[in-house]
Structure formats: C-alpha cells, structure tokens
Image (cartoon, rainbow, N blue to C red; front, side, top):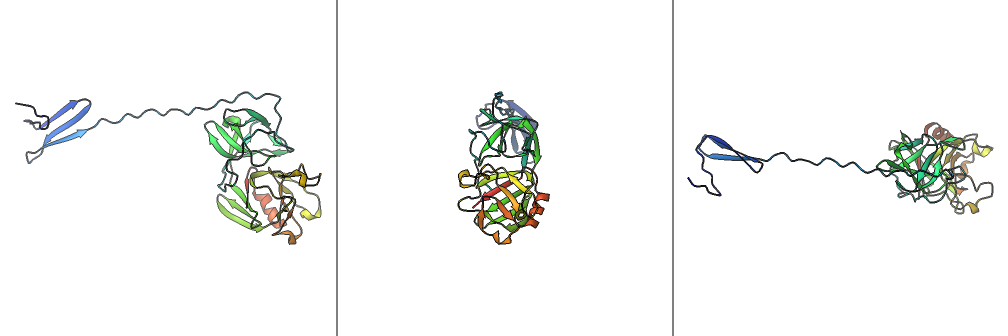
Amino acid sequence: MSWSPRVLWLSVAGLLIVTLGIVVAVTRDPNDVVVMQRRMPPAVSAAPVPATVPAAAPAPSTLKKISYWGTPSGFPRDPAPDSLEPVKEGLRPHGKVAVYDAPGGKARAFLPTDISGLPVTVPIVARRPGWVAVLLPSVNRRVGWLPLTSGDVRPLHDQLIVDLSDRRLTWLRDGQERGSWEVSIGSRRTPTPLGRTYVMGHTITSGRVYAGEDAIVLGAVPDDKDALSASLRNGHTAIHAWSDSSAFGRDISNGCIRLPAKVQRTLLKSIGLGAVVHVVE
C-alpha cells in the first residue's frame, strides 16, 4: 500500500493519529464515508505580568506643610479642569503624608489630617498602579500624587456644578439632579476661579448679610489676590447665603457663590467633605 500526501486509506472503523501535538480523529459513518476531525490542543496563555508600582522616595523632614494660607509650588496642573465627570472617591490621610509631583516622583509638601480645623478629605481624580492623584487645596487647578497606602478611600456621592454663564448652581447626587438655583458669582474684577475644586468644610460667618448660616469653604483661592482688599486676599472661595435676593443672577461678589439662605441650609446638611465643585463657563 502506498501513502499519498493528500489521501489516507483506512481499513478500520476508527483510528487516532497523533503527530506534532495535533490529534486527528478518524471515523467511518454509516454511508461508508471516512470523516476526519481535527482537534487542536488548548492554547496556553501567559501569566499576567504584575504592574510595576513606583516606589515613594522618603520625604525630607524640612518640606513645608499644605495649609489654609497656601500650597508649595511644583505640583502639576489638573489634567481635566473642565471635566464634569463625577469624582466618586476621596482619600482621608492616615496622618501627615508626603505629596509628590508624580508617581514615584519628588515629594513637594506634606498634607496634614486637618487644615485650620477642617478634617481633610481630598478627591481622587486619577489613578496609577499604587498611586492616586488628588485635587489640592489652597491652590487652583493643581493635583498632587499620593501612595494609595497614605489613607482610607471613601465614596463621594455629591457634586456641585457652578455655571458662570448661566449664574446657576446645580447639585447632583450619584449623577441625579437634586436641585438647581440661580446664584450670584464673582465680578469681572474678582471672578470666581474656574476649574475643579472641592468642599473643605464649613466655617462660621459674621454679619446679617450671611443670614446666620455657615459658609461652605472650597479649596479654591482668588486667582488675582491683588484685586481684593487686604482683609480678603488670603481667604478661600466659598459658597454662602446672602440676605439680599436682588444679588442673584448677577456677577457682583468677591469671587464667592452667593445663594438663598434656604438653599444654603440644604447644602450644609447634604454635601459632605471632599465633594467636587466644578466651576465652568
């Protein structure tokens, strides 16, 4: 009997041919037709390679601490200051932790557990293996990088959108609108800072114009401090009540967002630490 490269004659009902790791099953059907079926061995997949986590270099003890009055320089810009995407997580530091300019980069400052009595929760706006980028307080449109082990990650459910062109503040919870109100915003000389910032906490107010309600302190600060009176230059942008309703719908403040007292009470009860405030135009 001769072998052909294209035809194999068989005289048995069934046969297995194993060659080069390929299994071929040969059977004869009732109509005396030889049927050949080829079964390939299962593919062997390579094991996943663990992502490399950049190490955090030890931070010099002489680094300055982020405070209510300022944040040291050298931090990168917020990569998406105009984004309206919900920020769903924040980080509460375990203690005084070093903040870096990149994953595995240079330590630029220390972030404390509280700033002027306000407990710190910073929103997480980006992730890399073993690291998170957070919005920084006391500076506008800057982020810093923290090792993920620096603190506890907590959920964030709320976001506030301040539309300067419409002079309107909108509150969203888990992506669903819970309220929208006409507000007053910064004047042309002292504008409300654009970009993403966040709720640092609450502070008391003094004066009848604030309707007896606390203010919501934001991480943002004036872009042009020299445009303000000396007593306001080192302050933060805030959301606060205003007793004069004729101010709403106008750009007349020193940069803060003014709204009705009833709305302020709602926000004070509802908006937690670290909630992102998107200021857009």
